[in-house]
Length: 163
Image 1: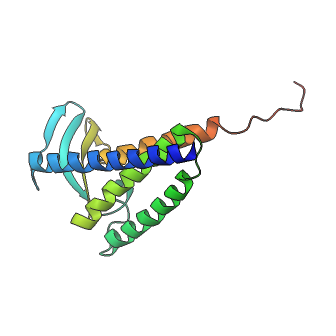
Image 2: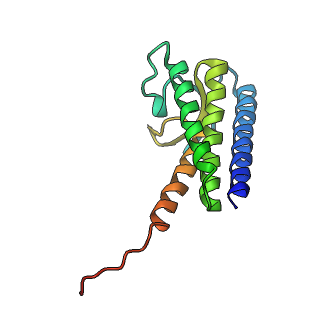
Image 3: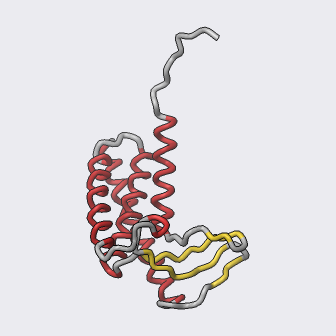
């Protein structure tokens, strides 16, 4: 079962990275390097924003940031692969695969461009959520599944206290 989950997780990571990179390629062609904002509806736009930092653009001021974040992502990826090799639950393997694939997609951007390309701009009026991409969405979904798994697979403790 562990071998099957390893394959599932790694395949999902590969598919996630390919979808992320394919969407970025297509959106860069559509929008261009400094292209316009494309309004899809009242609360969602397509934009091109370069993120040299980590989540929400934090820590992006250093010239070494792309290298540091790439090395950090590779180390975390190695830890996730080691964990994936031991996983016995399919949903947890899928979650790790999503995080691995998202991280790999963003690492490819850092190696190619020195920053991560973000395109999706969700907003409510003038309040904008920081731009994100498919990789970011996969990482978020993977972490949510991991949290759900951790909360629901914890051993049930019987209470010795009477009500």
